Length: 287
Ligand SMILES: C[S@@+](CC[C@H](N)C(=O)[O-])C[C@H]1O[C@@H](n2cnc3c(N)ncnc32)[C@H](O)[C@@H]1O
Image (tube, rainbow, N blue to C red; front, side, top):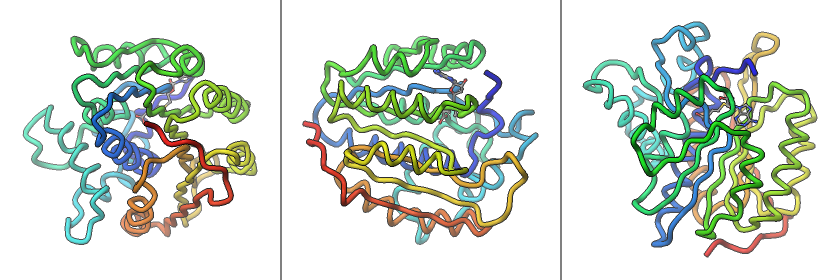
């Protein structure tokens, strides 16, 4: 396990994933019913964009840092809410003046969207990242951090007693069989908890992404993808997607509105694709 999210925090892939995550949380907490959230591959929780890892790649420069100073006029509401959540995290460390420096990972964004009574479990397998995550939430009783295999956690924790849930699955894709393991785990999770809302991040490099999406054909599915238009160095990420299973009402509309704007702001010929699963069989809605 060599992957460190610190090298990639705030890049274009994080922008896509985190804009969607903030919006999903908002929509799923609009109902007066308790929500369970599982982040199966949670990372360290927060990242210093001026730190060594982030500066070595500069990926945030072509991601969140392109959006953060943007003129709010014409900005889609979902992007505004994402940037407000990012700024609120950054402000915990200082005045919030000056360029964005502290970027929230998915557990921090989830925590910020929870209500009293909602439940959140964050799993991270890497010892150092898990320790950082435990420190990030030390003393916070609303968050349970587990140093554990996220795929095992899907089996152990689903279905949740709340019967309403958001599950983020964001693997590092270091292992050559990650797509296969992911596909098996999502199918198992759906058998246990068919009505949950699942958000799965995936890299788009070859046919493997399409093959993975094909395994979700029987679900109510929305896929969102971002592609860089410029060539990237060999081995670097050029495109990525999010598969959202059982998206809440209004999510698709909000993302269709936001993605072209995000793509245009990111520049570098970035293009966005949104595909719904009209041919797919709709799953029953969460209560
Ligand atoms: C892409 S990063 C997560 C980023 C995070 N979700 C975010 O958006 O801020 C993937 C993380 O999964 C961890 N990891 C790798 N294999 C894992 C497993 N089987 N279970 C849980 N975590 C794992 C890695 O150490 C890494 O921190």
